[in-house]
Image 1 (cartoon, rainbow, N blue to C red):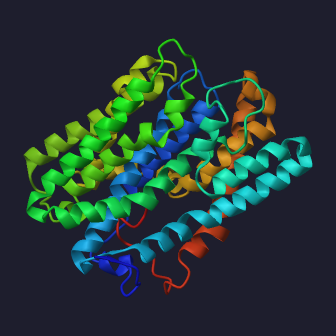
Image 2: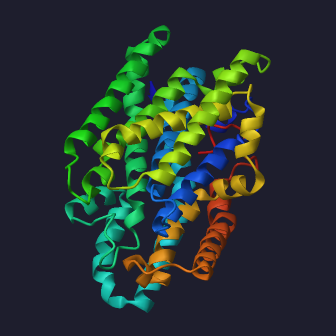
Image 3: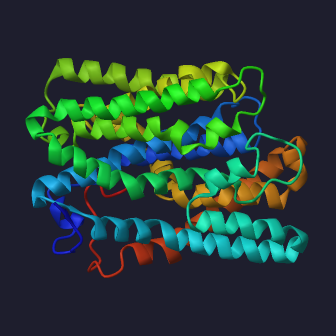
Length: 389
């Protein structure tokens, strides 16, 4: 059954899985750096917008893994514990960010506050992706003054997933027995297929701005569902029990990991938002490539791949990727708004803006996000890969 009590925390349920998977943090870092490169309008990385899809697959995988393992150990899904953890993880940084943006706008350009309040409300209730669709706010336009909260559309998609997915997953786990788990995986992948087909169907050839299908929960859900299917097919506990001495497995995983990473890099470097390919299967290919990378990272047979993506600087950025994502867009649009209309960035500007983004995100993590996230946990940091989402 679905339980609303907090008898046993998720951290306790997963304490046997030791060590944070640093490679996943490295993958997060790659994703957020790609998004920043896209908003910097770097000509050599036109597909940086695909970084958001990497985040979606990761979220679908990790969140589903938490819920499945919790149900298997406790016989129930503890929604109260799950949502409290999500709130502690996401809300402190978001509230701090929104307060500073409002103050910043009030000082620098009070005339824009009228429209900002609407975007702010939509962001607080995690519906701003649909608000931007209704208000016809383009994600891709280089004209006008974009909302400093435009990038929060992706957080809205994820929060909507966090709200509804536990119920849907519980229903699936309740009615489909464990030995028939493949049926549930098939249903989830069917849902992903419907979402991907919706994106392809709603795609309008010749239209330069595809914001509707880029923002929509219905047309982006496939990435989250593909990640969820992976968690059911290859849960973290099952992966950790696998032998690390199988040479054949290492070869296969190496091919998957390197091939998946190469595919992601190719798409970031050589595709862009106007290519029909992206909306007619390209983003699905990106999700499959992300799955391959995740499998290679978490499997104990491939230590070198995890160490490579878990390289110190990448891991540091990945741990703080949420804050970096929050802060990058308003810093890029409000500190040098003329650059959004197409003016070329200089190296000095790029370095200055990146330094500001990383500094503020780092301070937010140290003094706001992390203390609240780990409050009342007896200073015990989570050691499960599935908790560090």
